[in-house]
Picture 1: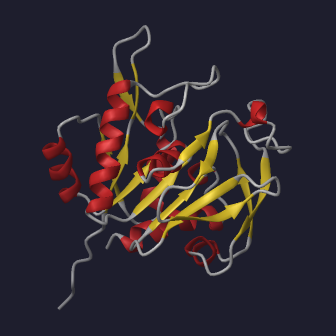
Picture 2: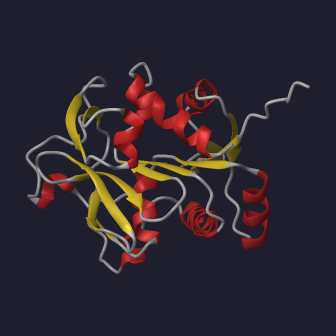
Picture 3: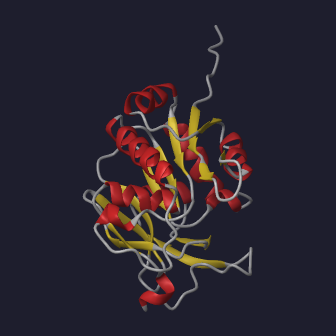
Length: 238
């Protein structure tokens, strides 16, 4: 008898805006396309601030993509706000923190991207560099606004899940982040860096599937090493 293959449902947390317009939740289509191409069914997650509702939501999905967005509010990691820090909306902050905390408790497979990676780091008790250019830490441009095709090299640790997925120790990554991980959250390990020492990817010791990257793989899926992040999440979510 033929077994009907059920595609895993992958939740994607929406971004949220309400400045001067009717409030709306939205997501860029390339996240959706990357999951479909990877063999999953994308499901958009709006802002939900009720813990039980978030749990119920998470029971219905098989895996989770934590998307890019504005910045984690610095009070989450006990620091004063830098003038370059643009915090996510307070409702999104509450919703995302619930989503991540409960998803981790439920051991859901997670792929975190940019702000999503920073969010997980903070949930695990880590802290962030609030603005790379003014921190004096970096000589590499990590956010080239003028050039959509700007890429920089990232070195991947051998024996990491990322190395296994990408099949290489050297990735050309795009870059749209002005913040980065400062101190790692408890149980997290850095698995990729740029040559200036900025952490570009994290994983979680002993967790079934968690990969967090600082770049935006959904925008460069024509390169199999970036597309494979989404198919790996889908496989882990079966």
